[in-house]
Length: 111
Length: 115
Image (cartoon, rainbow over all chains, first blue to last red; front, side):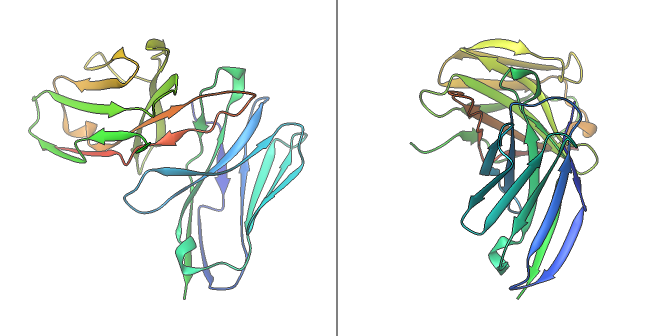
């Protein structure tokens, strides 16, 4: 079953602005991951945050995790047209190495 | 490594025909996943393997779907007979969990259209 639920579903921003999207999940997790999917392509791993971490950075990406609220956020700073894509969160609940994905956020960055 | 390789990239078939999708995982990865993506249902996990053994096939929608992994470098997903509602993009992914890192590597997907 799908665990992650991203919010909002679609986001349109101007180049240079920041984009924030959220994800909630239902059960305990070992880690939470964010993936990007460009149109017509497979998903690409962006960043992983473990359950004992609260914040993590990678380049222009910033991920937060609040295990008490069972939620995570992905912030893309100084967005570029190339950031236009769908973004998915995924959790590995149950410790069985399988990933459950949310329905994704579509982000459009207008040049 | 070339990454996860799926074939074909596109498949158009008539209802009732058998369809076979193929996947070559990344060498050394011991987990392999088959996902299906549609606009309505998002990304659904169909089945996954560990060391070539099916671990959980509860996501396989019907008996018309079957998956095999005869060796560590090859897996197939078969639909027989195919139906229009099977139209979707099918992704294969592989991973090598270690020290809690379950990052999955996805293939480019097979876009299946059943007419």
